[in-house]
Length: 318
Ligand SMILES: Nc1nc2c(ncn2[C@@H]2O[C@H](COP(=O)(O)OP(=O)(O)O)[C@@H](O)[C@H]2O)c(=O)[nH]1
Ligand SMILES: [Mg+2]
Image (cartoon, rainbow, N blue to C red; front, side, top):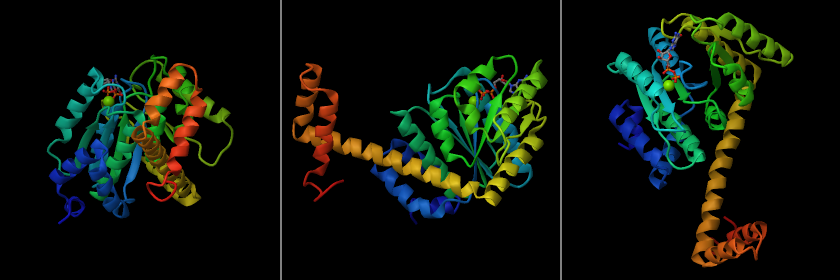
């Protein structure tokens, strides 16, 4: 049996190994995804983002418990583009691990920084694909922060949940980072703390201000640590999914994701190829020397390297 067949038959150890392989980002990983891809596309992928410490891990743990109660299996990918582990994330992950460690219907995996952010976003897509093929009904993708890297990673989600909390200046942070635009559902977490109602009202007002549109993101108050509001939140997430499927938004999202994926892979491939060919011919070091000495401008240098892609190695353009 191939690795992908083993994964499809529920072999969790092989799944873990395959994830490590795609994380490496090499040829073996690419082959795995080629084989896996036709079997993917069944899971409901939920992206969870928000500032560090907002309670994402706790909330994902609570949502996982809720889903399990409904007989749904759950995969969790925790993506950390900044540092392998922050104190908060580690604590949250530990608690979550303990709670669900013995449950075969739950699979949790952390992805740490490997190379570029683009590479991390790519690896996230590949890991989501593998979990999908492994048959998990729901896949939560949790990011650590709320910046551009998170916006890229959320492209792999069908539905994006944005967490805000009272009293952290989150309003400013969230509204600035462009995270507002990607939120399909908002959770005001730590609703046991002061200012939650006011924050929820502000958020509602901002969402109304954005004008009428097909989907108006709902705002749900939650206390992740106690499980309060978690059932309502799950209903809101499923509500968005169902709306997307009815309205054609789902297909739109899938196409946007396809474009981002292919574009990302192509960009990396063309760049690698131009760099490799430039290096082979000794052109690259000479050009860099010239640009450093300000005798050639960087645009001309890049154009010359791009011209190199038309070389005869592959009998035509890459
Ligand atoms: N008071 C309160 N604390 C919470 C709530 N949810 C999470 N926390 C706490 O907030 C801290 C950060 O939570 P964590 O889930 O690790 O946040 P993350 O960094 O967004 O993943 C932990 O100490 C949690 O116990 C909540 O609803 N109310
Ligand atoms: Mg966390």
